[in-house]
Amino acid sequence: MDYFNHDEPRAAATFSVNIRESAAVIALLSPGLRFFQQGIAILILLIVSASVGTRAQSAGAGATQDSGAVDQEPPWSLRASAATYFFPHDENYVQPTVAVDRGSLHIEGRYNYEDRRSVSGFVGWNLQLGKTVTLQLTPMFGAVIGDTDGIIPALELDLAWRRLELYSEGEYVIEVDHLSDRFLYNWSEVSIRATEWLRAGLVTQRTRAHRAPLDIQRGLLVGVTVSKVEPVFYFFNPGSGDHFFVASIGVEF
Image (cartoon, rainbow, N blue to C red; front, side, top):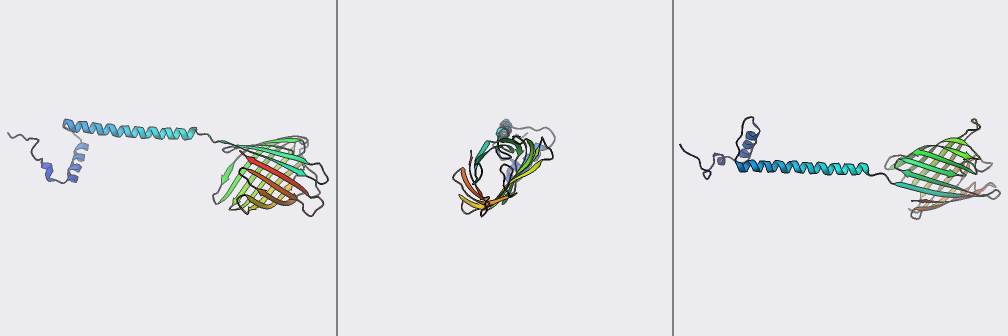
C-alpha cells in the first residue's frame, strides 16, 4: 500500500487558484461529514471569531450613535423685543414681547399688545417648509387678561425668498365678558435687504391698543442688524395729522 506524503505535490495543484477555491467552498457547504487538518480548523475558528467580533463592535457603535442621537435634546432659544410708541398728541407707551422656542415648541408673552395694561400668553407649534423659498408657520392659542380679558387663536407667518421677506402676525381676540365683542389684530411687514445688515420696506398695523382714525395704519420701516441685535424704526401714516413713530429693538439668545 502506498502512503501519500505531505511533501509530495497535490492533485489540486494541477488546477488554477480560482477552481481550487471554488471546490473548497462547495466541499465546505455540501451536506455530509468533513475532515479538516488541525491547523485549518483553527484558522477557520479564528476567522469566524474575528468576523463575529467585528460585527458585534459595529452593531454596538451603531447603537451608541443612535442612542446619542435620541438622547440629544433640541436647544432653547430666546427672542426679546421692546417697541416704544411715540405719539404727537397722546401718551407714549412701551410694548415688550418675549418668545421662547425649543424645537417645534413655541411659547410667547406680550404686554400692552391687545390693550394697555394687559398681559397675553401663547403656546404654539413651529412648522417650517421649503428650501429656496422658506415658509415658517406658528399657529398659537392663548389668552389675555387686564383691561381686556379674552381668549386668542393666533398665527405667525414668515415667508422669505433671497433678500425679500414677508412677516405677519395676526390674532383674533374674543372677549369673555362680551362674546360678541371680537377684534382682529394684525402686524405685517414686507422688506428687502439691501445688504446683510440693512433692510427697508413697508408695514401695516391694526390694533386697539391705541386709538386712531384709520382702521389700518400704514407706514415705512428701516432696520439694521448688528450681530444678534436689530433696531428697527417705523414711521406710520406719513403725510397725515395722525402720524406716529415706533422705535423697536430686538435681541436673540
